[in-house]
Amino acid sequence: MDVITWRKSRRSGGQGGACVEVARFPEAVGVRDSKDPDGAKLVLGQGAFRALVGELKRS
Image 1 (cartoon, one colour):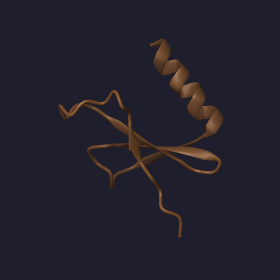
Image 2 (tube, helix red, strand yellow):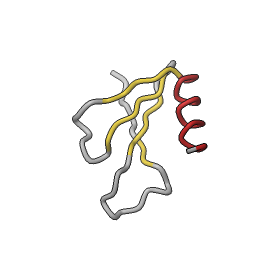
Image 3 (cartoon, helix red, strand yellow):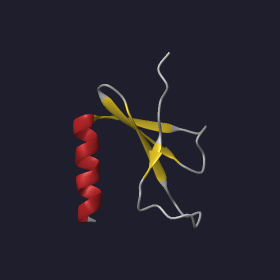
């Protein structure tokens, strides 16, 4: 069984704000709320994840 490694951005502070964690899968990227690791997860294809990050950077 493979272990999924979730990681938080280096820019994320310890103030308890809104943070997300990401995990890399062979063909996708998972995204989850760092404050609710057992909650819902969003799984995006690699191209969709790149597009999402690009949109967020332009916002």
